[in-house]
Image (cartoon, rainbow, N blue to C red):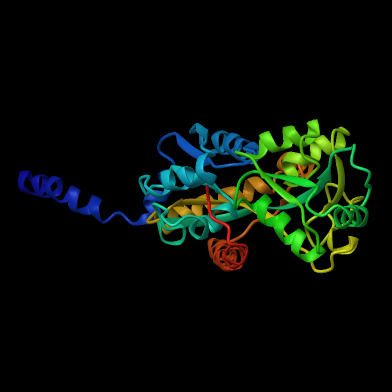
Length: 320
């Protein structure tokens, strides 16, 4: 009996090494989690973080790192322990960085693992109320009459707001002047103050100010009208046929995280997205709710890398 007991004790570490990933995932999460956000609003991360805290009993800390277009945010997740406790609120911005900068300290496809798409986010074409236009067509006519005299704000060189507006310029046949800012907030502040005349800003950041009358919304950038502002036409139906530029939010974790943990996190995020209060909050801030499999998010990332990489090369844009 003594020898059998001793044998059982000796074999415990060996058995522990062979614990299946599904068993590990059952205990996940085992410690507080970090939800890292790059440039742009952190509203969705805080909303989801609160729900994850409530359901799993582990605190989720939102950590915003907007510098270098979010490169530092993605790098932090890429280099974290591959245990699913460090999340990235991913956006199309991360698919442009490899085209903008000669040296990026990680590979977004190889070093990060997709979990789920969360939301589709139209951009809002908005102007300062002093600009004498009330439609996209009127804005295009004014810009053609004053080539190079109207300026627009973006959240930085090569940012999605920059690319969205340059695509608008190209397709509308107009020339406007780019004024890059370090982040979404400063550019929006100057738009409200009238220091810049217009912007294509992410809807969750600009819609509240449009509703408050501080800026004038003209159109949305998606192919379909937004359910959050159905009265606004699309840019495509307002004189620029075929125009579409839609952002998105997703969740990525460190590459090498077990598939069982990714599956558990995916299922929980999809459950949270279906909650009525989460749906209502996302609607209020202009987010079109979307859930997906990890594979669907991976396909979207690859498509964005190709699409926006080509636009960046055609424009000759380089990161600051």
